[in-house]
Image (cartoon, rainbow, N blue to C red):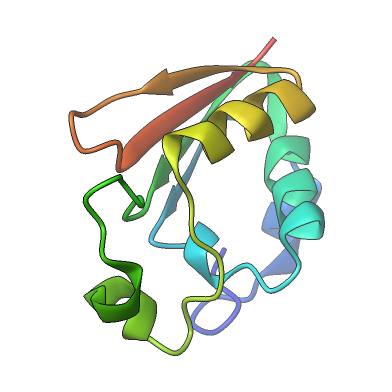
Length: 107
């Protein structure tokens, strides 16, 4: 599903074992709605894979290139993903050293 290039909403009425959201979550104008939608697509035990640039202690936010992309409106830290995992009752795995690849498992 892609709202611009493949807006087939039938894909949003099914459940999956694995959903990938690469360079997606930073575009969430309504984060709670969007996270609810993503997690609703998972079967029990299913995985949601996320890839986005994460803020770190070294990030200089005012000059950060990722922030300057005008469609990027939501930004995340590892702490944010831990909060999301707790809020939606999922298991969190941070899959790379940059913190930019994350997996949630519905439990």
